[in-house]
Amino acid sequence: LVLSLLVLATGALAKPALRARDDAPVPQFSADRYPTGVDGCAWLNWIADRTHENDLTVVKAGINTRINSMSTSEWEGIGNGIITSDLITTINEYITGMECERDATMVARCEGLSDVGCQFKDFASDDSTVIFNKTDGAVASPPNHKVVFETDEIRVIDVYCPPSSLELAFHTHTRLSFWISWGTSRGERYWGYNGTALFDDDLWDGKEGNSLKVMWNGPEWFHMIEEKETDNLAPGNCDSDLAPECSNGFKYRVELKLDDALEHHGYSWVRYQ
Image (cartoon, rainbow, N blue to C red):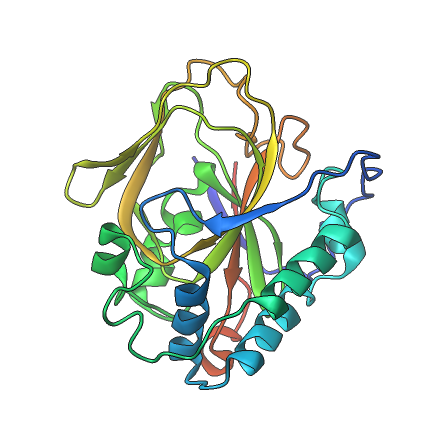
C-alpha cells in the first residue's frame, strides 16, 4: 500500500460531464441516517457556532458560497448525470429557505442531535492538528475515502467499502458536512469507537431502486463501516478505484471548510494506489 499526498490545482481532475438524465430525480432533504446525522436547524446552528456568526442568513449564504466554489462544470464532472446545475441550484435554494432561528444553546443541549452525535459534538479540528493529519478518513483509511474534488472552501469525498469487509482503519471526520447520495438502503454496520455497533441496516432487498438524498451530518469520532453486502449490486457503493465514474450510484461526503484562517493553508488530496 502506498499513500501519496499530492498538491493539485482544483481543476486538474475535472472530466467531461455525463449528460443529465431526462428523468432527473427529486432530492430528499433530511438528517443523515448514520448515528451522527443532525436535523437541519441544528446543523445550521452548529455551523454558526463554529464560525461565531449570529445571523443565520449570513450562515446560509456562507454555505452556498462554499458549495458554489465548485463551478457547474466541476460538479457535473463528478456527478454521473445526477449532480447537475439544477440540483446545485435546488440545494442552494433549499438551504436559503430553511426556516430556522439562531439558538446558540441548541447544539450544546443536543437538540436535533442523535445520542451518538451528542457524544461527538465537541470533537473538532482544523487541518493543521494531529487529529486531522493522522486520523482523518482520507488519511487513515484511504481505500475507503477518495477525494474526488477539493477547493479552498469544500472537499468532496467518495465513501466506499468493499463487499463483505470492514473499512481499513478506525478514523474520524472533524468537519461539518452533508451527503449527496444516489443509491439505496444497504447492509451496512457502523462500529463506534467503543467497539459497539451503533447502526446496523438490513441487507438490500434486491428491489429498492436509487433515490437521491441530501443529508446533514455532524463530526464523527473514531468509527468504522462494515459492508455486509456480499456483492456490489446494491446501488450507491462506488469503488474508489472508479470514482468519480460511478455508474451504480455514489455516496459523496461534502465537507465544509469553515475557518478561513485555519483551513486555507493548503489542499489535502490523498490518493490510494
